Image 1 (cartoon, rainbow, N blue to C red):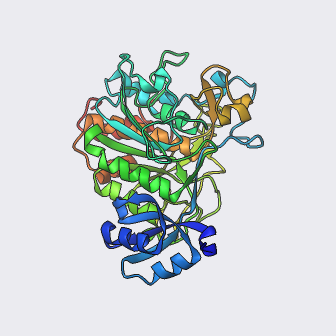
Image 2: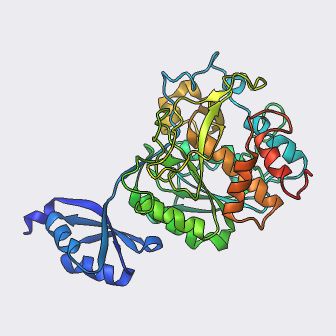
Image 3: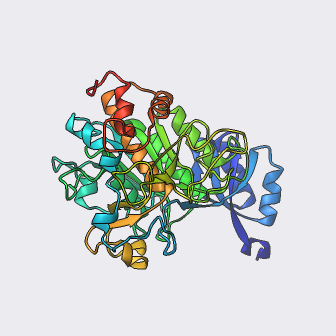
Length: 408
């Protein structure tokens, strides 16, 4: 018996090509857990002796630890930005469609129709507000579970459902407005996190690999990444960031959260530290959505610059006490029942929620101008971003005013 084999750890090995790398791993007796062709890498389980041998092999370019990644929206009982004043989620939650001006665009016919948003997260709840568009047509085009490499997807944590609904919820609010920013957009759900909101580099990269491989099949134009981790290297060397950059190079608008480790400088997480993606921080309306002067940057929202000197986040969006769909029996709803209305909605704060807002706005923009590249979408968003309000000066509306679309 090989006693050294009894103690193993997981790594990501990057090579020059997949075939040669696979042969090298198999030759030392390592276990291949993930094939990550998007970055010519593999997730592997190795003993110390196997790792030492592979580090000297010509087929191996880099060795990375399979680090942990977490979603970036978590209610905390002592966080004033997530607490309610009277326990009524319907009253105290932010109505994101009005705050961003998306409601005005819906009235102009801009609803995200024809644009698919892929959400890499904890899965999604099959509520009609998520899986059906306002015409009661199925718009959940595909589901993929990167944690099991299967098509069976469930959301036992709740974060993925919440984030997805902020972007696309087709249910109506009490005011007769759509609950999501882009209610007609199509959705692809990719699960990369477990029922406690925990993920790994290998699972996230496999999720991104699947998204890029299926981009044309499902017309994926926007990719929502409401998660992050502390950067462990320069952005270009990070294997997860390499996969994110591959999605950007494939023509997908990548929207990533800044992280919830603020407010100190240089706290932007990966993959939000990638300069090419749209990195989103969170602001809050201070429970007075009709008053602008008391809005402020959420204290948890991570701040730049990045280690490489890039200014981040690229913009901020509403991310305080955001109202989204969530089943009552998932981890977050059971653990924090005071933030659930007991029916369909949960209130949560985070740069995750702000990221979903921007993903929805990107879908509106791409419906209006489908020819835009990811860089052009980012430029439009950054040059048009203004403080949130309910008027025509709000974020979503001002973005569209710069184009030749319906609102001009």
